[in-house]
Image 1 (cartoon, rainbow, N blue to C red):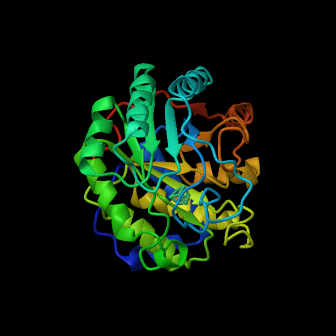
Image 2 (cartoon, rainbow, N blue to C red):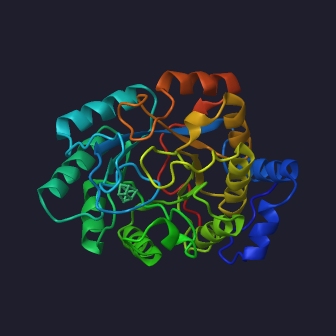
Length: 330
Ligand code: SF4
């Protein structure tokens, strides 16, 4: 299969037709697109560290870090820079090429904590790792500061469709998300943006969210597809587990409409068997988050050793550091 032109004019009907096509055809098509655009035997390994945990003023219904829900998550102030850099070094030694730092903030404030984040970004960048942050909403000048410190990517998920947004979050608007993504782009930082399935949304909502991403002037370089991790104490704790075939459909559709992007199999992976994860790789996922089980992450993730064994079993290998711009041909 030859690389098709990247498109930015997808319609809902087109996307729904892809999403609802017979599963094996869908996976075959997605696997073909994957092979045309990416080495199919490589998976990017990203390590995620929560640098500031819990106590968030936002009300995202799926999140155990929202201060208003009573969850088991322990509030943790911003970690010392040396601690973060030690984790980054460990992640690099274990085969990660990207290190993501997450802070449970509504938005970045121009204060000492942000100065410390800037130091962390500089330090991780100097180690030769791609450095990514997710810190909430950003202004244009904050994005610029992060870029100057060496930030490679900024994660800011759409979460769900514009139509369903108010059902999940009331403390901000869908447009706020787009605004931050615009600031990130303008600063020349790559964009990591995707969403979550299993929030009670319809397939049309899923498609609508993918359509927003696929019709951006420039596709996000990285697109995390999460399955709801049901955190006790949050409003969504009793929703049913996401069916694996729905994850496979979502990943395959994302792969087809965002062919140059890294499609990341993210939260919810711990509830999947190896066989189920293999289906997701076949459907075009080529990036995973890994971490020290339960210690660094706010929702559990498989441990690093298990992930390496999984890749070995499937004949996959960790991707070397992405060269800037390889994924930004749109
Ligand atoms: S998802 Fe982020 S913004 Fe929303 S409550 Fe959790 S930490 Fe806060």
